[in-house]
Amino acid sequence: MLKKQGNEFFNREQYSDAAAKYKLVSFKSQDLAKDNLKSIPSSAANTVQLQCTLNLMACYLKIGKFDECISEGSEVCFGPVLLNFPIKFLNQLQVLTYDSNNVKAYYRRGQAYKELGQLEAAVADLSKAHEICPEDETIAEVMRATEEKLAREGGGKNLSKGFVIEEIVEDDSSEPPNSERRHLLHILFHNHMKE
Image (cartoon, rainbow, N blue to C red; front, top):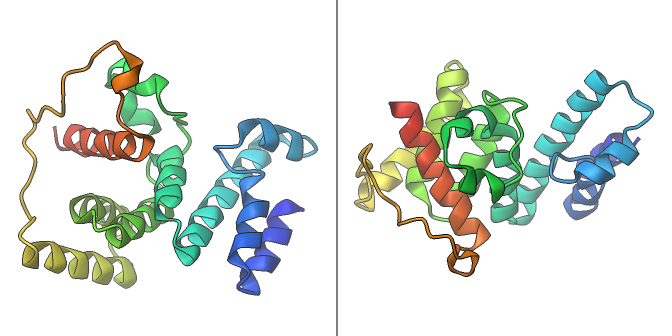
């Protein structure tokens, strides 16, 4: 019901209203989602939840809420590879292990990174989307354009595997803000994937 209502708003280009409906069953709203999906069998509920999260990402792109799009995408993508990272990082995010190869999540999150000017992260996500779905010309074109922009701006440097972000401290008051923390985890994720 909520997904259908969200789709109707989306088709009428009422993206904020659509986002409000999708958010009620997205991965980040677990308690609300359980209540809103209780009449659906659990396997179908997971599928609806994934679809609504991906649709929510599309809405966030349309209305310029790029940080929120990245956050939702991270809920879909990060899960399995973060299992080897320090527990301190895992406690700071609600990470789900639902679909680490979801092309739409990588593509939409890559677009959001691009819009925020975080071109290295954008190229990483778009490359992953292209790896998953090499026949998709739209992904290939957006990836090429982003790589060219990154090269023009002189930021095409790769991070080494031994890259140290900062020393981890036990005092929670010195933690980076959520968007910076997500970006740091994104860098760790892609360095881990290269190993």
